[in-house]
Image (cartoon, rainbow, N blue to C red):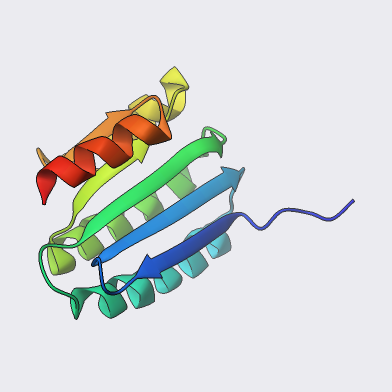
Length: 126
């Protein structure tokens, strides 16, 4: 059995959008790698037209240790400050959803229970 990567990021430069799928339990090194790859993808889509949109899928992410959550909070605050995206977070589990709301406390960041709801909301933000 092959281990799943802790995250996958895809970017659509034409639509100025990215999707990040996160899973499992992370350590600080994983958060740093995620931050670097998210920054690269955000930079690529920033060249597109319109305000960037990010869909972050946390359905398979575990509740993270405090050190990891703190590091993630700093990274997300920095990147959302630099790139000003509209962010939809898919997080059906209550604890992960609460943790994601603490990480991204902005009115243009919303949490949803399904991928379809998040995608529809992002379309209305354009």
